[in-house]
Image (cartoon, rainbow, N blue to C red; front, side, top):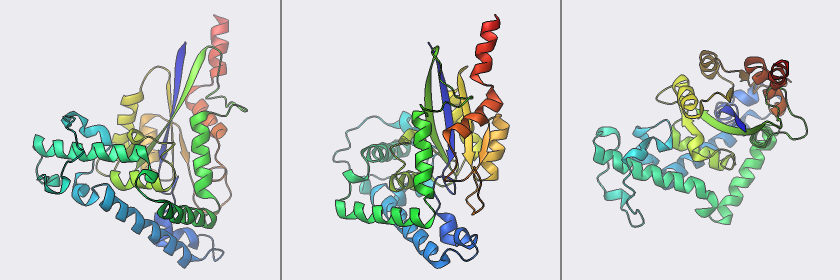
Amino acid sequence: MDQKINVFVWDMDETLVLLKSLITGTYAKAFNGSKDVQKGIEIGKTWENQILRICDDYFFYEQIEGCNKPYVDVMREYDDELDLTDYDYKNDGFVGASFNDDANKRKLAYRHRIIAQKYKEGLRSVFGEKMIKSWDNLYQETDDFTDKWLSSAKACVAECASGNKDSIPDGISDSTSSRIENVNVIVTSGSLIPSLVKCLLFRLDDLFSYDNVYSSWEVGKYKCFSLIKERFNGPNVQFCAIGDGWEECEAAENMQWPFVQIDPGPVSTSHRFPGLTFETLGHYIGVIYGDDDDDDDDDDDE
C-alpha cells in the first residue's frame, strides 16, 4: 500500500503558546479593557522565570546558550556513545561556542543526548508532585485568562496527530488503498533549549517528540522548513504550515506549502484557537495538493 504522510508544521510562540504577548501586555490590551493587563503580565513573567530556571538548572542552558542549534540530533555524529552516568559536566573543559574543534563538539553532543533523554522522560521524572501541581495551576490560570487558547491549541494538534475519524477532510481523506500518517513538527523562532522546555511545561511533549522541535533562531524559518522537507520529502508527502508571523508565511510561500494564518487577537475568526480544526487544515491542503477524490476519479477514468 502507498503511504501518505501529512506534515503539519506549527509555529510555537503566539500560535500554540501565548507568552511574549502576555509579558508585553499586548494580548490583554487588544481586548480594550475587558482583560486585566497587569495580571497577564504577571502570568507571562512567572512562565518566563520558570522556563529560564529549568533551562539553567536541568538542561545545561547556561553552558550552551551560545551554541544554539536548529534541532537536537544535529550533533549526533560527534557522540561516541560514552556512558554518561558519572560524567562531570561542570569540569569537562567544555567552552561553549568559543571553539569548534571535534572535542568540544563531542561534549556538546553529550549534553544534547541528555537533553533528549530528559525530554522523553518528561518533567515528572525530574520533579516532585508539589512542583508539578504548581505548574498545573499556572497552566490552568493561563488557559482561563486566554479563553482556553492553550488547551484548544493542544486539542487541535492532537486531532491532527490522530486524524478525525468521524469527519474526513477532502485534502487528507483516508481511503482503502492508502495508509495515512500525520506528523506534527514545531518550528520556533526562540532558541532550542527554552523551546523544548516550553513544550514540556505547556503540555506539548506528548504531541511533539524532541526530534520534531526545530529552532530558527540562527538559521531562519526558511532553512528550518527546508530541513523538514528534506527529512520527510517523498511523492506522497504533503506539508501545511500554521503560524501567526510574516516569516513563516513567507517561508511557506517559498516552499509552495499551504499556510494557515493564526490571529491571537479578540476578533472572532475560524483561524484562532479555539476554532481551527483538522478539517479546516485539510481544506487548505486540498487547495494546494488537490483532493484525493480527484485522484480517484482520474484512476477510474483510466
